[in-house]
Amino acid sequence: MSPTLLSVVVPMYNEEAVLHQLVARLRPVLDGMDVPYEVVAVDDGSSDSTAGMVQQIRTEWPQLRLLRLMRNSGHQAAITAGMTAAVGDYVVTIDADLQDPPETIAEMLKTAQAENVDVVYGVRSDRSTDSVFKRQTAALYYWLMRRVAGPHVPSNAGDFRLMSRRVLDAVNRLPEEGRVYRLIIPWFGFPSANVY
Image (cartoon, rainbow, N blue to C red; front, top):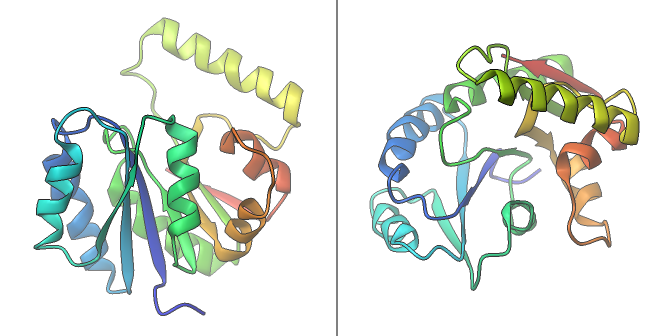
């Protein structure tokens, strides 16, 4: 087992407007969990001051690491880079824009350990703030993904998930580039649970 129990991978692209809000919500959650953790911020070739802001925040938050991609490579590529660099026994992926609540991370880890599952999906249970169009296209997307990848693709589960090291090692051994984790992770068939 790694001395780091939890890695949190955060892909970032031009996030200067939300970065301080993210830190203000994420750090208290992780500090309050009282487990050894790291945060891997992956700057996906931002053209704003995201990377510089992360560097500044690092001076006061030693668990924060910055991984910089030289050019914008896309969301899934940034997640791949972060998961490859992560050292934790469990890894959470969460977007920087706070569309998913960092406060759920503690519950995800607790669920993984209590239920002995390898994947915990953060599932959006309330889409009432989404437009009708967004809700309909999301429903169509998940229907289509189940047709392609099988019935194990959970509805309303984006890239906010916790994975065990066992899952991460399996993912990192894949030779394919351009991975779509919303499909790959469920396809593996590891024991899973949903929260929120």
